[in-house]
Image (cartoon, rainbow, N blue to C red):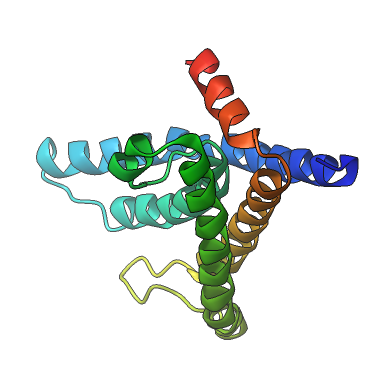
Length: 178
C-alpha cells in the first residue's frame, strides 16, 4: 500500500479512536443521570423532569461518535453467516463492494443532515419539553459523525483495495488483541 494512503489510514483511524475514547466517557454522565432518574422516581416518588431527557441527549452523540471507530473494529452488524462460509478472496470482494455502499449512504444522509442541523442551529431549537434544553448542539453531531464514518469507510476501502492481505492482517490483529 502506498505510504501516503497508509498515513491517511492511520491518521483518520487515530482521530476516530480518540473521538471514540472521548465519547465513551459520556457513559460516566449517562449512567449516574439515569440512576438519579430511577431512584428519584421509584424511591422518592419524585420524578425528574430533566434526567431522562439529558441522558437521551447525551446518548445521541455517544452513539454517533462511536460509530466510525466501531466500523474500523468491525463491530457493526454484518452478515457473519455469509462471510464465515466463504473464502478469503470472496470475503475481500464483499468488503470491496460494502465500503462504497457505506460511503454512498453517508453522502446521501449528509445531504439531508447538514440542512437539518443548520436549521436547528439557526433557530436555536429546543426540545419544547418542560425542561426545554437546546437540542441544536446534539443535531450538529449528525453531520460530523457522517463525515467521520464516511472517511473511515473510505480509508478502510482503500486499504482493502490496495493491500490484498489487509483483511487477513486486520483479523489476525483483532484475534491477538482479544
